[in-house]
Length: 77
Image (tube, rainbow, N blue to C red):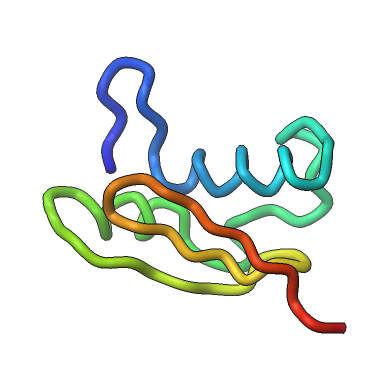
């Protein structure tokens, strides 16, 4: 999922999805993504491949698919 024009990288899509769900700007997220997952590795993971990756970020379980879909599930307290 490399950027191509207006497309976002996987890491950008995760930040956008989490910020949207929380109703804040991406710059206002409390926890940097790099403290949870290496953004460059996440972006590289989907270059020319298929599959998905799941990890916890902030209060969500995040699943990123190779086609760019990001799904968020709230973690149980």
